Length: 171
Image (cartoon, rainbow, N blue to C red; front, top):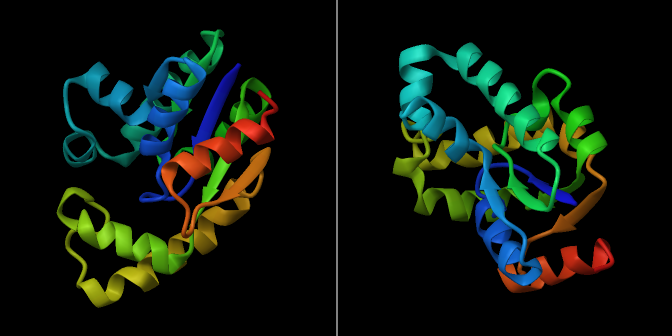
């Protein structure tokens, strides 16, 4: 079984994926890391040197490879992955998808702590970050909402969230 975790940046996809990987004894794959390894560039470098269209095409190609590999896997998706092409339909047909939903307030608190390592918000003034997140969520929630399951992450530990996912998937 492939379990795909999706949600906005800062929702905990990578962290929760690692914990699920340990609890279920499934391998863990970070889609952005796979893209970065394939091109030997960081994601911000790929955006800067090759552009977003190139990145999104590579994201789709590597997503398809991961979903077609079969076997057990925890797949941590990029925040924008479900939005492009027919990615969300592909994700739902080849895996169990989990939307890690967090409030604008929670996402803002988390992302401000990592602002410099987040290219999308690095140049924003701190007080503009909540509005930026809210706008993105408005655009992306119709895609995120297509996930098989939604788990609210506000005020929960990573362990509690991973346990909730395991119960939803009836392990």
